[in-house]
Image (cartoon, rainbow, N blue to C red; front, side, top):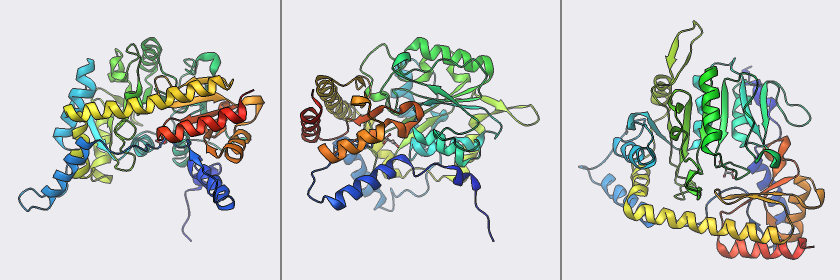
Length: 411
Ligand code: MLT
């Protein structure tokens, strides 16, 4: 009989968001008239910018004409999109990133998981706690961890706690770790990192030959001009960092699918025989073999994000969600809750009231307010006692959800 990848058996329960959906669906089945408002998964609700739609419609028409029809595109993405990204997202901020170092993909979730394929199995890996669960689960699947303990912590991973006490930014580890996941603006806590904090990570990584996986999927939501948007704003990052970016949250592409990963050509890691190998070359090889690129139509839509109209419309979307975030912060604070994040990020991280556990608060909110959020414990042991509310929803739903929570929880 064929055998399985036994590492999958080490995974705890289901992936967080399907597990939440399962619980909510069970509740809705028993309470079909309950007006449930979902502020759990960070999925956008507002329509695609018209600049993107127009570009995609035009691209569809091109596909319908023999003279402009496009077959397979470059696995790394079309040059015009990579150039637009390099110019607008990096050069405009003084970052040295060449278009050829940008790999267009169908999502940062896939890329942060797939990137492990080009690294050895003996690396020590550090994640923050709480953390975006994909980083942990993909390492479990890849066989980079031992079994989980009672708290859901996997053997072999180095957990860096992020709590209110350290402003949800991890202490630089004392020991050497090889691969480090950083996510700023942070999912789930909504925290951001200062230039000094990121500089300390870059110096650590360069000193130890470590690689930083820098997930900047939420950079568009930064409102404080002093906060870096890219790790490449930091001196020395080109020799130690891979950056993940996405069009999902800023331009509403969660259903359309387009993202990109930056692998600088200066980045190297060690082969078994001790020689240094360029990571760009390995990722390029991996993508050329296992990926056939994002559709021409979607890449044209993504390119339109950088047009004048596209930039204005994306700004409008971000401002809309950040107004939601402000409203959520205000209402929860007024209800007496300890509230974090939501200023430079679309996530609000709150201390559960009355010492409730994360999942107990989830159930209470669902059953009494018909509002869905995400239990902090689902992001890691140190997330216990916290809860995440997403600002991605209509204004009407956010206002109504906050009204219900204020009514139920105000002391
Ligand atoms: C979240 O809610 O954390 C995000 O939607 C997850 C994701 O982007 O995959």
